[in-house]
Image 1 (cartoon, rainbow, N blue to C red):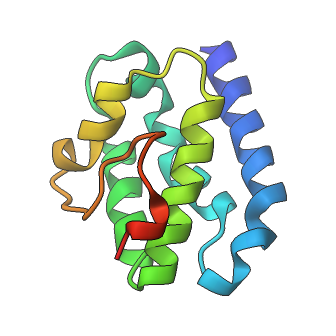
Image 2: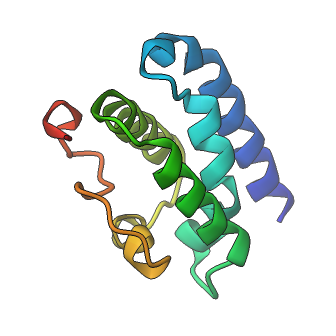
Amino acid sequence: MARVMKLACLVLACMVVAGPMVAEAQISCGTVASRVAPCIAYLTRGGPLPPACCAGVRSLNSLANTTPARQAACRCLQSAARSIPGLNQGAASGLPRACGVRISYPISTTTNCNNVK
C-alpha cells in the first residue's frame, strides 16, 4: 500500500509540473491525476472498484466538457498511464464503462488525442 501511495504522489507531482502546459484547455494534468489517483490500486492490482475512483472519473468527465479540455484530459491520461508500472491496460480502457461513464475515446497509450472531439 505504501508503494502505491508513493507512486500516486509521484504521478500527482508530475502532473502538477506538466499542468501549465495545458492551461489554455482549462483542465490541468494535476486535476486529471487527482481525479484518477483513487483508481491506481484497482488499475494495477485489480479487486473491487473503489467508489472514490468512480466519483473521480465522473468528475473528470464533467470537467472535460469542451474539445480542447477532452484532448488535454486524453493527453494527461496517456502520460499518467505511461508512468504507472504494472498498469493493466484492459482495466484502464474499461474504467469509464465500469464507472457508468461514456467517453468518446478509449483510455490507451495509443489513442490519438488530436482526434478526440
